[in-house]
Amino acid sequence: MKRTITIEEVRKAVEAAHAHFREEKGGKNADYIPYLKNVPSGLFGITVCLADGRSVSAGDTDYRFGIESVSKVPTALLVMNQYGARKILERIGADATGLPFNSIMAILLENDHPSTPLVNAGAISACSMVRPAGNAEAKWKAIAQFISSLCGSDVTVIDELYRSESATNFNNRSIAWLLKNYDRIYDDPEMALDLYTRQCSLGVSTRQLAVMAATIANCGTNPVTREEVFHANLTPHIASLMATVGFYERTGDWLFNTGLPAKSGVGGGIMAVVPGVMGLAAFAPPLDGAGNSVKAQKALEYISVRLGLNIFNPARIEVAAQESVKEKACR
Ligand code: GLU
Image 1 (cartoon, rainbow, N blue to C red):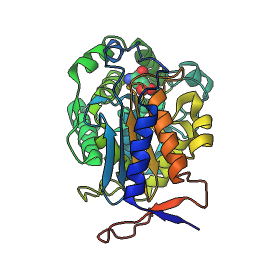
Image 2: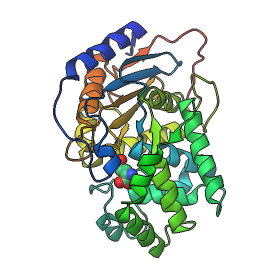
Image 3: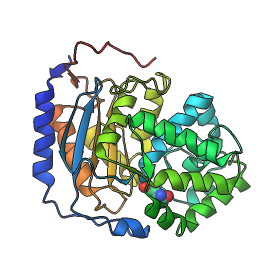
Image 4: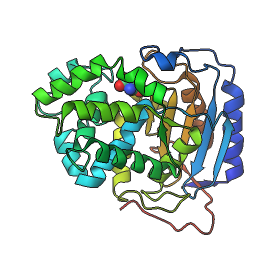
């Protein structure tokens, strides 16, 4: 039932998506974090990395933008890798709130957990769980190293963005302390908040983000460096979390149109995963009303439809892999 496509077809789809949406004018940069307001709005890049490590790119794919909420994916993975997936379900949960990503109301409405590690409350809670406990620098090292391993190259904080977020993150500060009130912070709340703010301020390119997505697609083994970054059985769990909440309050619409587990961030980046097949990343700063990049989502939707990537479609594709790549199952 599956259709096999070549990397040339992927390249044509990526180039066509870039050409189609380059002039798209909708949306505007996030402005509640001052740094993001000033990122050049015309930047636009797309990268697809196959589960065997080959990649194709179009546009501004080396520009390092703020990873923002996309960072919630690797931290959720790190914590699942350290504790096992069950523990995260128990302590944080896996349900969409149906409310904005930084909602305080969602915490008040949930009695027993912060809902999912892919919204602010759950992500701050996840940062508090990162091992080793009690040591901010060691925790940060664990997070930054894990993200670099997923990307296959070093990621570093954009200092100006970190300062900008730290000076304005009053809502997130309230979330951290409210979670503490409900016993859902598992270390110092200020430390968890700072780790979360730092991880959101990491700069990544679409090339790096696509390798991260391909590592998830490839059951935890980075297809470029060959490093085994996380347990293979976590791919279906993280893909499920992305599918349920990755596009804020527009997640249902996105999934309906593309059938792709994906996570977007207010820096303008989107990362999508086709398990076993490929990772995709796109970036363009102007956002829609829910916080998703207008151009990046159109580009990825175009590629998904053109290549038949929808994971719910039995006729979805696989890509002709290089001979060196062994078949892998996420077990
Ligand atoms: N650092 C941002 C915040 O906490 C991330 C938001 C996002 O990308 O959704 O508000």
